[in-house]
Image (cartoon, rainbow, N blue to C red):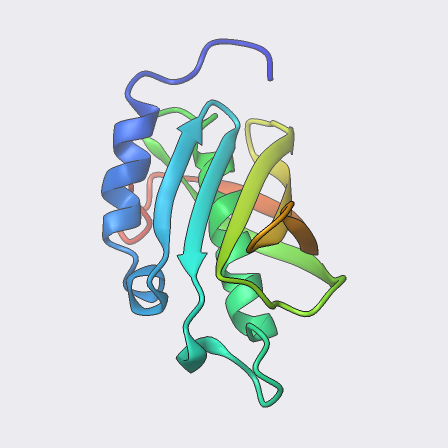
Length: 149
């Protein structure tokens, strides 16, 4: 990531994340915020599984989208916001673990469109296991009261 991070971006991301009812509902926590990278962690919860007991693909996708969106949010001006306009998820391994880590990283910053890549990991005893990847396209939004912060 080149350039200087926007002033106060980590605090803005933390405040915005606190307003995310969906992330609160699934028990997600914002655990790392740096310029161009955001991590979200989630404990295993049976209520978030599909019929085989694996973390549901919808939960994985939502967490990856959120991590990628906030990674993009970390590189824009304070008066702008971010909306996802497209993403693709590859599910690589069943979501089986005690905890899950979702990392979003800006791949291509831009003034109007930002591309971010995400990786989801299952964490238990031993090394973390890659369970999913995402590529997302984010739109920078300015001047809309209903899409602020």
